[in-house]
Image (cartoon, rainbow, N blue to C red; front, side, top):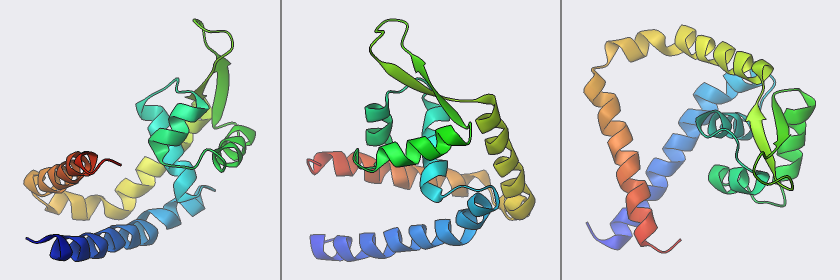
Amino acid sequence: MDISTFKHELFVVTYDVQKILHETMAPICQQHGLTLQQMHVLMELMRTPGLTAGQLSDQAGILRTNFPSVCRKLEDRGLIERQRSQTDKRSLRLRVTDEGRALMAGIDEEVQRRYGTAFAAEPPETFDTIIEGFQALADFSKKLGR
């Protein structure tokens, strides 16, 4: 495939993925009082607890200038908390609270309720292929010198 065709296909697929997220996950997030961006932050923190705000901003792909307001809204709702680092008292680490974990469990239940039947009807290889494709794209993008 030449670079022009790849660029075109990448834009089409990326748009399709965004559309899928907005049509499937955004309504569930809204039902639980979250934006997709806030949901992403919670998912990143659950995957890697104890990140600093800068690390989490980078990992979630949110500009550092915009991140404090996203973080503050989650803190105000009691979904995340800042804790002083045990090794560096100047550093604050972010963690999902029990309330945040409960909210995420509720979202998981709603996803299962809405989409569980469709997922169960697919062979596991379908999901392996999808994830492998995203991982290949992430690996390739590192070669582009982002």
